[in-house]
Amino acid sequence: MQFAGSHILSVQQFERADVERIFSVADQMEPYAHRRRVTKVLDGAILGSMFFEPSTRTRVSFGSAFNLLGGEVRETTGFENSALAKGESLYDTARVLSGYSDVIAMRHPAEGSVAEFAAASRVPVINGGDGSNEHPSQALLDLYTIKSELADSGRGIDGLRIAMVGDLLHGRTVHSLCKLLCLYSDLQVVLVSPQELSMPESIVDYLRAAGHQVVESDVLEASIAHVDIVYSTRIQEERFSTQAEADLYRGRFRLNQDIYTHHCEPNTVIMHPLPRDSRDHARELDDDLNDNPNLAIFRQTDNGVLVRMALFALTLDVVDQVDAHARDVNWYTQRRF
Ligand code: NCD
View: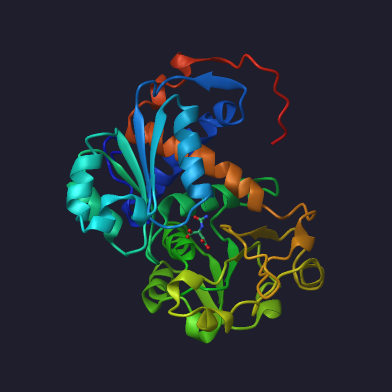
């Protein structure tokens, strides 16, 4: 695909070569994300960061990624603080705000809303999550993490064995990740969820059409026995009509160190898009895994910056100029990544 000036709305717009291009630009961003070098390649550029649903890491890492490229960030957070609360349409909001920005990152609770907004925007729009539909930058950072976690043992994404666990009905991260995995071959995908929260049939069909082996289950222990990656997810309480309904499912699948030791292979990588629900009645990923070297959740969040820097550099077409606008940092730095 041609990245310059393009919206990033769904992983389905990518070919495998596009994903590889994003990953190689992400690698190139490493000295900047790891604070050894600073670049001013986006000096003067403005990111419109518009988050109409709760967000910590996606919002902040999009902003940090833009800052690390030398640009500035204008934030709008929450419906109540925007004219959408006065009945303004997405069309009007997009016409207005795209006049104030060079690129926009947006999250919104309604499926398809970010695409509707993008259709009226005068600048590229990156989907930071639209309801239960898609979260393309998360899927890219997840796949980038999978690739780098497996690299040490000489394995690649083709032939991967992965278990996705939790609320697979509402989780946009697993929807996007499954679609992205369809660009690769010979995967074994185990989908572990309560039956009522199983992966939408259209996505299961899509995985099977790509030639992957798909097994659906509602038992955790047996499902995680022979996989390279366990990708755990939170019950998406905001998609249920009542908390009581969400409570029926919270805590159903809990991965902790004891279960990991007894059921997983020694090097199985543990992932989660975060936030993990650490309240007692949930704990889908127990804190007692924090010292497990295969817990990759904070490497995922670090990788999110690299991947989002790559998306900005590509959509704003500055990849080849990043290093020309760079210098070493002035300050003492001994950050461990
Ligand atoms: C996810 C999301 O918002 O879809 N979080 C994130 O962006 N890392 C997952 C979640 O909220 O459970």
